[in-house]
Length: 204
Image (cartoon, rainbow, N blue to C red; front, side):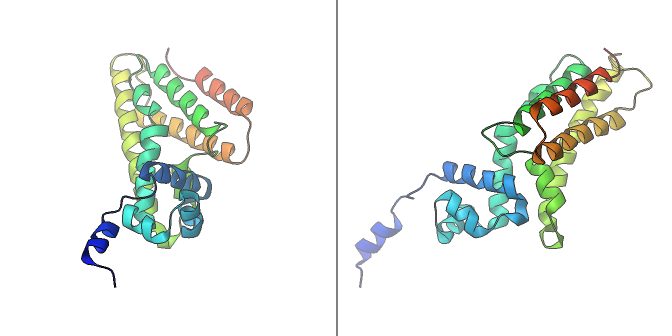
């Protein structure tokens, strides 16, 4: 039987893995498979840890996904914040489109968009995850609508333009790009889509 000192040493032993690296590995699995498509076995193998270690450090699969989604937004979607700071509405659109293009076609990352993949592949048993993804997207969409409203008020967009409809159009194009990237569309193909969208953009 182990002494109390030995037990204390075992309990106090530091983790033998880097939580940040493990979370990054989990993100790539979720990104490729979606929430439901990623099994616990595949996740823990990619993370290089055991199931008990995963549960102890990150919680259950749902909690792990939420942390991975936070990481995705913080590191992969950071271009969205800078896009809203562009001087013109067209500049906002271009930064969003080209930022999405870069991340969706990166040679070092999975193709497509984690949010799109997880929201369209979640069944009834993962409804809370789907709701989380949709809620986060709605928050981003609302910020874009506010920016386009400001552009219209400043005369950067025609008075006839409805900011909410324009934001929905832009989001739909970006989500469509993610679906096409996931299906293997080339960067050149998606660049033509970006260029066409910008050529049709209202205002300057």
